[in-house]
Length: 233
Image (cartoon, rainbow, N blue to C red; front, side, top):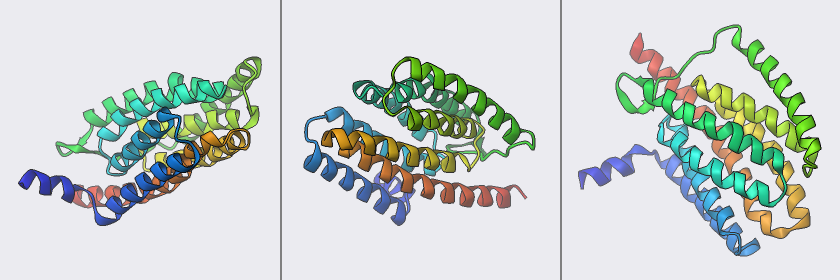
């Protein structure tokens, strides 16, 4: 009984509401607009779970992101979004693994369920921008050669994903804003897909939900960072 109370008490009321509402919207969207692509439903639900745990700075969130990356890579391949497929399977997936290791290796005061919030060095934003520009330009030509559908948003998604991934490894609260920016690009991308096939509405709804979850994640990490600073002072 105590264990059950601990599990339910781990998340705040607002986090439970966010998680439950996200799940309901994903399932309803799937039932109304799709009902066929079970992978889309499963990926969306795993992704929503991942973001809630990530918002708590819990390494479980990164473990779930590994699973989501694989599922999303398959969905992207089905829609010929090769940029998304390559980005998630070739970048987000391995970075999620590295982030999981990083988060596990840097617990806050021995608390395995909360990572110690990191801080960027002054030179890192410049380095991150330089790497992002170089990789994005390279990916543009690769994606064009692969006849990637909706090339522009697919290319922009590479940039936002890379920024978010870098900040995630560095355990920066701003990783969530990076993913929120990426969510906006993916909303654009999958809206174009929905215009051709309504079966992808559930995926579109998924990223709208992810956007609000990531915004909450940023606010949550800022609070966590503040609490950690107080405890360390």
